[in-house]
Amino acid sequence: MFSRYLFKALEEVGLVSLWSSPLDAKLLCLQRFVRLFGYGSTTLILVSYLSALEISKSRIGLFMTLTLIGSTVLSFVLTIFADALGRRAILVLGAVLMTISGVVFALVGNYWALLIAAVVGVISPSGNEVGPFRSIEESTIAHLTPESKRGDIYAWYSLLGAAGSAFGMGVCGWILEFMMEHLEWEPIRAYRVIFFVYAGLGVVMICVVLSLSKACELEELLPIEDVNTLSTGGEKQKRSFILSKMPRFSRRSKLVVVKLCALFALESFGSNLTPLSWITYFFHDKFDLPESKIGTLFFITTFVAAISMLFAAALARRFGNIKTMVFAHLPSAIFLSLIPAPRSVEVSIVFLVLRSCTQSMDTPPRSAFLAGIVEPHERTAMMGLVNISRSSLSSLSPLLTGVLAGKNMIWVSFVLAGSLLVTYDLGILAIFGGHKTEDKKLDEDVAMQRQLRE
Image 1: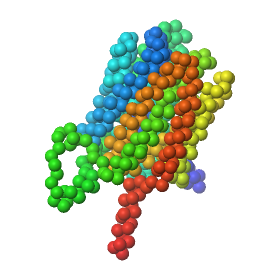
Image 2: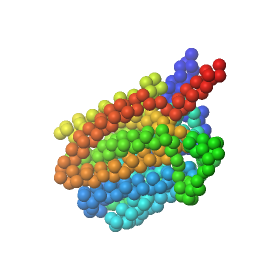
Image 3: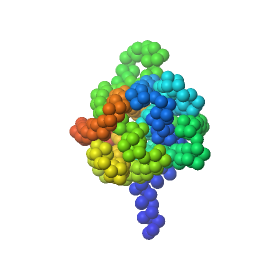
Image 4: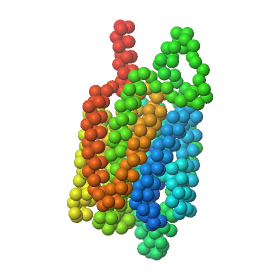
């Protein structure tokens, strides 16, 4: 009896699906943990490091904006050609760029050199995903796992990423406290140690990617329109080498991708008005909290957000991906806008913790929704375009926040961010509330064909 209930509990939180998944899926989850550990550790200190180098707030905002623009261009180029050139090869290249960026930040103090390393390489100014990694990994997980188990795998993929970010911020805060208080190091020297650790994590990622099998690669597939053309004897026009490596969307997928890009661009612009770097600055500037305590605070909130993802997969199985996305994300948007309102640090922390309880619950069902909304051969490119649209518009957010912070009006960023996120939630419910995934459409077509035969 006990073993049956235990198995049911493990099944509800997705551990059974994760255990039975291919080794490649587990390695991709491990790689996300390592990468987000690095992002979390550097996000905690990025603004403080640039400030310690006597860089103005407006230039820091410009730095973050240009970094996001560089990430957008890098993601666009690498994800569009990932399926054709090899997913593993692109992941290795991204890990190499991450390693190089860490080394430059650890050794150089010149603003323009750091800017080049951030724009060309991989540095996360917000603690969120940058580079080509997430699009390729989520597409590969969908390729390796059946639809019935994707939600569970994505939940653990997201949870391990959030846990990595939490541990990264927590460990970074503890290391900084030890170096600056016990060893009495200067802040810049201590910050640079963290960037050396970041570069080392890039090397670990290279090793993980090299352990992936050929099963991660996608076989060359044609859109349905091209298959019909070939089957009816139509001639296929010769394409240049570059165009031949680019994915092609079916007619019905193009409109879906445009709607997705618009909605997620709005969501990302709102989210990046208050990235972890600026929230860290807000608590440090308004309440004079040291980095060690801020690191512990964000360790707790990120850990809470990670645990909430396990409930998201179970809710999505009962209510659907879209409803789970919207009604889990709405409360977090409201609490975000309330964070700067109190004069007491304790009340602001309460709003921050309440926000963390649901802010990430939309991530697993969102990934499962995106994985099934287009055809398999369109998946990587679609996810890449969605992430690129998010990065392109959100690249303006830190610049706006930097200007507001320079005028002591950073609270406006919190209110504006919450309002935009509420608009996104309502928009995605209105547009995609009744949309069927490609997998479900395929199942319905098969069932209809069986009925006609009978």
